[in-house]
Image (cartoon, rainbow over the protein chains, first blue to last red):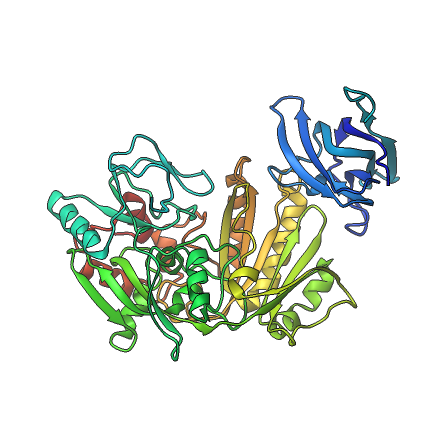
Length: 130
Length: 409
């Protein structure tokens, strides 16, 4: 199947909420990306995490099988380094095949649980949209 | 070139040595990599003449300071390999510098295998035995119990042989002695006929795991679990002879299923590209669940912000090795981890009292804060060990300032 999406995506407003309420892992507060790989090849992602006050950390290597979707919680990434909770971060996601990235935050620590979901920002690749 | 822990193999180092995690950095006066046992003995005799101390080192995977020295450091990397074996008794004499991964391939060719492994197999035979390295399983003691005989270079630079048949008490003292009674050069190991194991990993919630814990630990040959503090999930790891595996599909999701010889399916993290620091305590098996619950509560309350690494829960069969974590009691070990690039001491020190309150004994090769006064109270054979050490090495040839503080000598 023809690949859909872009090879480079960014998230500027990362911030994993510290508190959680309810059953886990279903209601664990989290920042998460869903990655859709429509292509016939595995998608290898390299994620770099940017902070406000210290150098970039990464890459975090993640693979999404061909013609699959995968959800990745930033909370769970520990190689090379666990992301701190309750700290602003940005993520630059580079894939070796075009993918679609959607960002979701669940904050179950507040009185009324809140969820936001948005498409990550897709950088227009040099040499066109692929 | 020998498979030394460091790129520097010259006798006069121009760079620091470091351990696997990078957390320990030191500069010995000399790093020696002898080619054979007699050369080890000569080094010890020379150290004696010169009034120097000498420390053996394995693969430098340990994150405690047991091999840190500013004097002579000796790597046995060249004294390795399968020397001879007896297929009927499943015993083999091997070089103490043999890395477990490489040795296992040789043993496989001879139709034998170690009974158990830790999560990694990068340690050397001497290092794994000397520090009480262990895997998991109610019927499996730590790896030092494989040692049934061998050859040792004494503090006077003499080569001696030993065996459980001739002097059982000496072997009980020697097994976990981190090179303070002599330098082990050859180890005769009690092994098993080569066989396959089926490894299955299942993911489930923490409470269902704890409710089934006793059964899980008894009905699997090898059983342990990871608890993930950022999701409160658990991954149980079960290994059994093919055909004897269990199924937990009613309350868990199968995440991995593979079959192979023990050295391929038990240690799964030998090639981790990223480093971590670790603190581990072993406690009586019956105290394990309560300790685990208290650690989980504390981590969720205070440390979730900065700690994403899993907590590892394992079983160790009791033994009679004098300084073994599992001396005289079936044990559970609980390991805390943190990325080596992140602060870890405050985390470890905050949780160490919880493990001590449950009768915990620290792993000799991992982070802990205990010294002789506290350790003496944990080991019934402490005084006998120290007396033997004093008898065998009265001048402290194998001691360092850290070991003197640790042992109180």
